[in-house]
Image (cartoon, rainbow, N blue to C red; front, side):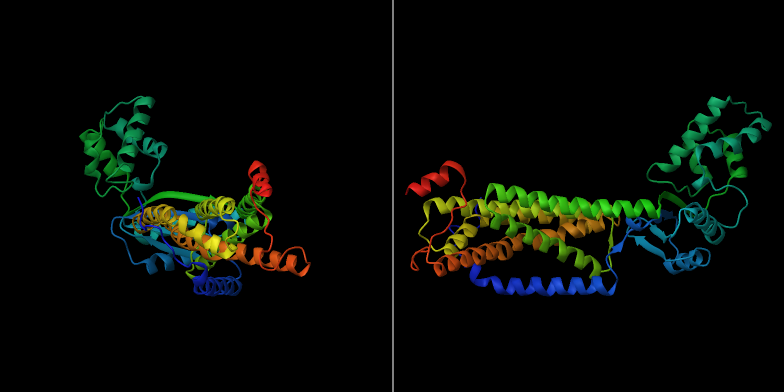
Amino acid sequence: MELFKNPRFDFLGRKWPFIIVSLVLTVAGLASLAVKGGPRYGIDFKGGTLMYLKFAKLPPLDQIRSALSERIQGEVSVQEVVGDQEVMVSTELQSEAELEAARRNIIETLNARFGGGSDKPDLNNAGQQLIAERLRDPLQRKGVVLSEDQLEALAGRIRDFRDTPPRSGLLRSVEELSKVEGVTPAALATIGEEFHLSPFSIRSIEVVGPKIGAEIRRQAMMATLLALGGMLVYIAFRFELMYGVAAVIAVFHDVIITVGLFSITDREISLTVVAALLTLVGYSMNDTIVTFDRIRENLKTMRRLPYPELVNLSINHTLNRTLMTSGLTFLTVLALYLFGGQVLSGFAFALVVGILIGTYSSIFIASPILVFWQGALERRKRAAGRGPAAAPARKNPVRGDSAKAVKQE
């Protein structure tokens, strides 16, 4: 499928508007990072507690934030997970000793403010062992005799029923448990006497120590730099050094702008975002290599064509492939960003921005760098008297037998 039939666009002639946009975005991103003291790291990198809560009726977020801020030191972030009555609570901690205390404080504070003030255990946040312990003696007093295995199995079925959709961890009435196998009227009455139902449930808790977070941050940076270094070596071996340098500069440009936009929009850098950045590195590099490979192929048959025209023609040759691949991928990640929810928001945002930036950087950043580099080499050769001014020699980036064949011509 071809979107354009024999395109002849002058991409290199229109490079400056895109270069100016890149410079503006780069400067704005770096300025934002400098003002804010670096990226805004998530708890994966700085340490802390991340908790997902589901409410039967979501209270105002400022009530949750103020309740937690009264008992927890440091920054407390409360964000709504759109569409599912959920909120994401994260706290920044400075030492390992604070982690468990903060987790308990969050649960106690939410129970005191939104849990109804009951002294009974909360069935929506009780584990299998607690359910079994609270039911053992009351059931025996009512004449319901269960072995330990039977009691554990019953508690497990109650927990599993509570945690499966559409309840997803939040029972609104004890009567809902009448559908559970083994929950007799006597057992149902006992559950109602021994437990209360809070209007929220804790979906998940993630705790990361600051030392582990710092190590993860270091490893993420090393992974990104090693990926860029490995690609530079590969392209320098497969083509020429100037091709590798141009490709790495373009990819580094994509990463810097993406991270800068995260800082400008005050988004967190988490492990999923690092995964998206590494995906972006590979995707953008692949797009650039496709263009470079076409340049190399055209050098075999169009050696007398001026280098800028040859590069421009090569970009036109790969234009349909670039638009089809990038366009379809962009639509996919855009859907992921719009409908993927809060958890995938950072990952999808990095890919949406990265694909847009990466697509035009292959054309308007990497290719002009090649032309500039090649022009500098030719000017140096002319100045040294090693080639006629009208037809300067140009080193062919083709390796092996193809290079020998070109030399014999």
